[in-house]
Amino acid sequence: MTIGIKNVLAGFIVMLCLGSVYAWSVFVPSLKQSYNWSTSETQIVFGVLIAVFTLSMTFSRSLLENYGPRVLGTMSGTLFLIGYGSAIFSGGSFSFILVTVGIIVGISTGLGYLVSISIPVQFYPGKKGLVTGLCAAGFGAGAIVLSYFTNFLFQGGFSVLTIFSIVGCLYGLLIVLFSQWFRKPPYNQATKQPINIHYLLRDKKFYRLLIGIFTGTFAGLLVIGNLKPIGLQYAIEESYLLHGVALFSIANFLGRIVWGWVSDSVRGSILIPLSLILIGVGTLLLGTTQLTAFSFLLFAFLIGFSFGANFVLYAKETAQLYGVENVSTIYPFVFLGYGISGITGPVIGGILHDMSGSYESAALVSFFLTVVAVIVYFIIVRNNQKVT
Image 1 (cartoon, rainbow, N blue to C red):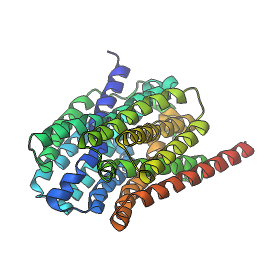
Image 2: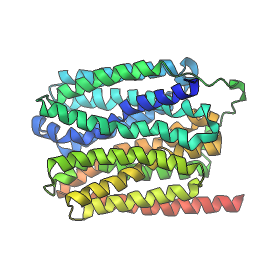
Image 3: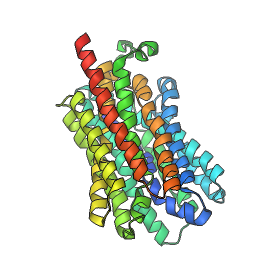
């Protein structure tokens, strides 16, 4: 097995473990029923995890340069084990789990994600979209595995806190193990041409990526954090709700591969607006129509497939615009858009639900943002074309 393939496989497995965060909605009913959490509280933990995840990526760039991918991956697995594993001692305390799962696991996710998204692609610069899609697909598939594993444990009588600890120990060890396969690419590091961050913050191309990923992930995270509760509003059977979470993850997994493969042939200026339109329409339909089991599964698939585009197209466009060797430097700043949406999307969805008793208002807000983002994206692209 070549070094490049081992890096891709390691990236996929680490992402698979870290992507378990996307199964968060399966824990929401138990946290509310067993420990009297509000919908807003469940979404605050999820949102903080996403926000800390993206911030830690930004601050981990120098750690990756100084200590290498294996050390960073090992740190990721250790923190994952500590964060989820210690939840069993929380007694269901919101503030305790906010710190352990929201903050500690958030840092773990940022460290592991940075390594997995930036190192493997450097071995295959001619296939940036496909390799990025394959590694990112692991993150999307994480909820597929965890949703069914969690359901099995719930049926076995395990409490939600015990399940947190089991997941923390098992996944944390896997992350540490497979992180030992990471290696830096063999090219001469002297060829790297770093981008000045002050220049980046004045670059319109950067802002079109930032706005795009914020809007696309705002809609997707709003749905991920509330998917099962949305289905419960329409008395959809428990089995279909579980399948809906898994189907979202399957579509997310497939979407990352398909969008990545297509992006090696089709320009991002076409694919990014298309993905935003699809996720905006899907979220609108999920939140405003009378759902049946079939429509619930259909909209979950559409949103999941579109959501997957966010974690391939923007990373690939970053490599395309700024150079593959600068992905670990530039992409964390683009990814901050995801962090902002992580703290706003699920939390706004939870607050609006607590106020109105439905997710209709949240779906309308999400759809409006995608329309605005598409318009702004085309304006920036058109202005850049005029300048060039």
